[in-house]
Image (cartoon, rainbow, N blue to C red; front, side, top):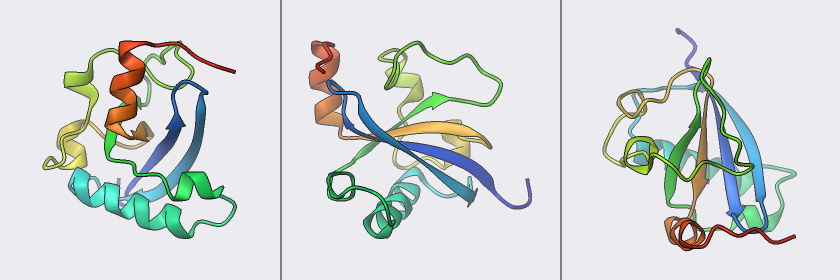
Length: 125
């Protein structure tokens, strides 16, 4: 794709409360490293209008593939708790090598929160 990929990033603020915001990024270069893409997303959300302050100031540090184009979606409302070793993006990989392509959706969250939620996957309203 000559214009870059369209990647949806789901900012996960709270797993328990199912508090997340999807953001769409157009023209993403899939040859960027995951670490560089994470910084690009952080820079964007710090200045994005209409995004509530709790999402802007949160310390996101991990990305995981939620859905790829033409693939099956999970029944989980926030993201699947399965296949972490395959779906969590390694910082030194390129997006392409990590499996990110056009129309991929990834979650961006804090790994510590994910670990706590995975150990006790209860939701609160």
